[in-house]
Image 1 (cartoon, rainbow, N blue to C red):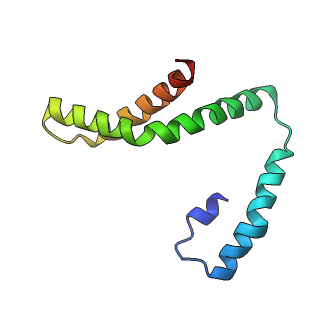
Image 2 (tube, rainbow, N blue to C red; image 1 turned 45 degrees about the horizontal axis):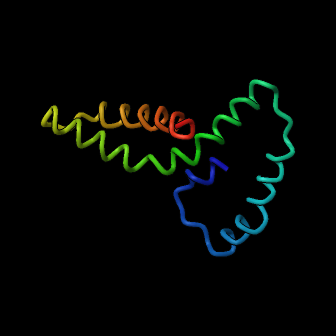
Image 3 (cartoon, rainbow, N blue to C red; image 1 turned 135 degrees about the vertical axis):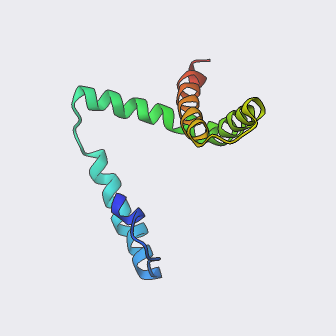
Length: 99
């Protein structure tokens, strides 16, 4: 599936339909039948619990962190604007369901 994101062409309607109707459901079905080790299962469950809060918090946290950084430093630091929001979103996503 990752390969499809890096193909530098737009697929035709037929290929898109094939992906949506057949290949994508087969991918989901094969993933649902995979037996995970305890460690992999714990990691998958954690990723599942974090996925929704990450989707919800991604934009607002990035906006807040970016604005705070620019207010304090009066410049744009790529390192801070990339790393700090990612770490903040993950931590907030882990804490949000518990709060």
